[in-house]
Length: 100
Image (cartoon, rainbow, N blue to C red):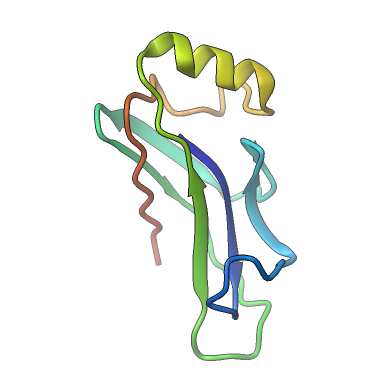
């Protein structure tokens, strides 16, 4: 499950950025869309609006490995994702891919 993602001009994921896509399972970007998950993959896309005057940017994501549907339900209840905004049935491992 993808827990948080942000875009930054810094390769260091510990440096904060104001361009947050997802934080603590809660979307922070209106263009963020999730696609149906498979057993080993979670996909999303977003429309990129450049907020930085640099040629190289980094997408930093934090993922959590889940084991079974009960783990998903417990994580979603603690986080901010609403069932209608979450991918359908996230399972065991998460992998992020972003559209250009």
